Amino acid sequence: MSVLPVTASFASYLTDERHFSPYTARCYGADLRQYVEYLADEHGIEVDDPAEGRAFDTRRNGHANGDVAGTISPTTVTGHILDTDADKIRAYLAHLGDKQYSPATTARKIATLRSFYKWAHRNGYIASNPMTLIRTPRQSKRLPKAITVEQIERLLCAPSERDVLGRRDRAMLETIYSTGIRVSELVGLEIGDLDLETESMHVRGKGKKERLVPLGTHALHAIRRYIEMVEADSRFGAAWRGAVSTGGHGHPLFINKHGGRLSSRSVRRKLDKYLREAGLDPTISPHTLRHSFATHLLDNGADLRSVQELLGHQSLSTTQVYTHLTTDRMREAYDKAHPRAEAI
Image 1 (tube, one colour):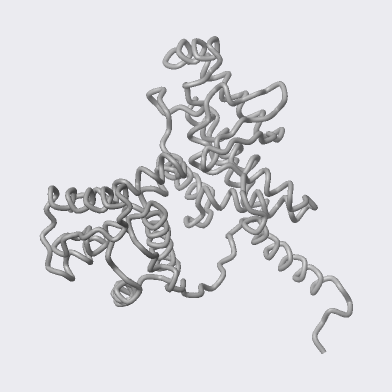
Image 2 (cartoon, one colour):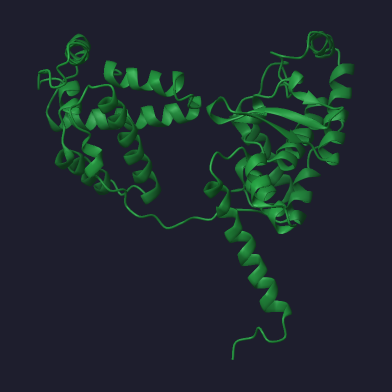
C-alpha cells in the first residue's frame, strides 16, 4: 500500500525535527501503515494516491486559511484518519486485541498514534486530539537482562586474534561492554571519534545527542591491536592511514571485509557466532551487554547519575530500572550470608 502524504509528512517530522533514529522512524511508519490498512479495509476504500494527496492539501490549506475543520472527502483514508474520534480509535485497538499482540507491542502502537495525533493537532490538521481520551494499558515491568562477569569473560575470549576481522570482533565486543554504547552508536563510530591519549571515545547517540565515554584498559588494548593489524593489512592499510591523516572523520572505526561500515545486523550475526562458540545463551543480544555494563557498574558502587551519563539516558528514571537488579542481588546475598536472615 502507498504511503499517504499525511503519514509521510509525519515521518519527515520525526526524522528532521525530532531526530529519531532510522530504526525508530521505521517502526512508527510500520505502525501507521497498519492503521491505514485497517481504515481502508474497514471502510472499503481503494487507496487512490492523487485523491489522498488532494485530501491532505485540503486540510493543510484549510489550516493556512484559519479553518481547522475544513471538509475532507470521507471516501479517502486521509479523511478518516483526520476526522476520527476516540470511539473509532478504540475500535482499532479492539482489532489489535483480536490479533493477540503482546502488551508491549500494543503499547508501542498506541504510542505511535499518540505522537501522530499530537503532531496533527499541533499543526492544526485536526480540531481536537482523540488520543487524550485513550489510556495505555498497564504493562508488567520487565527488568533488563544482564549476564554475569564470568559469562562476559567467556564471550570476550571467543574471537580469534589471528586475523583483522577476529581482532575487530574482539575490539567491538570489548568496546560495547567497556562503554555500554548501543549497537547503532557502535557502527556509527568513526576513526576520529577515538582518542587514545585521553582513553575516551566520542559517541553520537539518540536524538543527535553527543557524549564522551571513557574506555577501559582491556578495550583500549583490543582496539590498539585491531588498529595495528588493519594498518599492516594491504587491503585496508592505505585507506586507513589516509583517513587518519585527514582527522579520521567520515571513515568507520570498525570496518567490514570490504573496508566499509558495518551494519547493526552484522554485529548481531557476529555476536550470535561467538555465543555459540562460547556455549552461552543464544538469546543474549548486543543490548544485553549494555544492560550488563550498567548492572555491573551499579553492583560495584557506581552512582546512578554517572551511569545515566555513560548510557546517554535523557531521564534518570530510565536508568533507575537497573537498581531493581542490584537490589535483588543485594537481597539474595543478604539472605545467603546473614545469620538471622532465614525465614522463621
